[in-house]
Length: 99
Image (cartoon, rainbow, N blue to C red; front, side, top):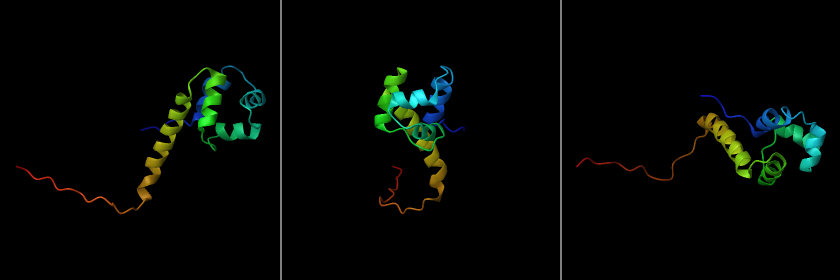
């Protein structure tokens, strides 16, 4: 099973590179610092709701597109890392009886 791409990778590969956009111009259009845009592209920053709306307006997409991409990325990462989480279940397991 492959891991979903971080939304920053999607942004770079599907929008910035094909349209030959300068990072400075994209950051300015989004109203963020270049260093913050670089952090998104490198997968260091998650896409917030506010950023999802900015990206949707800048690239004619929907905020849901960006937030779903972030959710898929986060869940895949969580599944990989959740094996080490040791939590006692608070809900008793029920026993099914055969009639």
